[in-house]
Length: 170
Image (cartoon, rainbow, N blue to C red; front, side, top):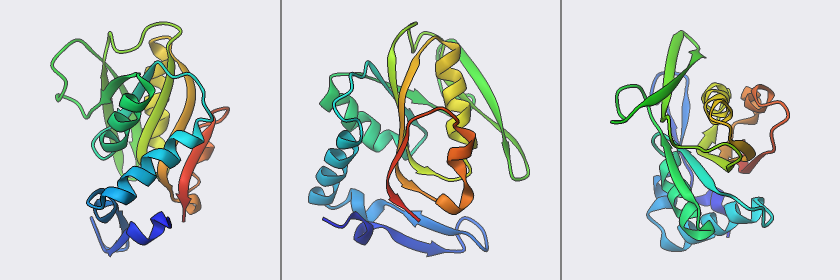
């Protein structure tokens, strides 16, 4: 199945000059959803995973499916103020300014084998911040995987030494 057929380009969203990769056509098609999950699992090549970290918000879709398939725990990473328990935070640079992400302080145990998942790897700032959170708690990052990589933005350069995989690259 060609998953690219289920990715819709939305021009000038969320602002002028951006071409947004909309995955909702993929999410609403049961066969495409199943094939995407299976393809993401194949990227892992059977590696043992203890926890799957999903990045807010579209990273949650497949991270929870992968966690279920791998009999692993699911860890949400969210924007500040969205998690109710003790949190750790990591700031990262945006094109104009900074933002932050948070994870529960007890989410990862030392030595946990962790998969980090998000829908899109763009500039890499978000994924880099999440890697720092996982490593601060003692997790071992097995892989960072993505549905889509926007290769022209060079995001994987911010993830040196990490196993970075994507199903689709633009």
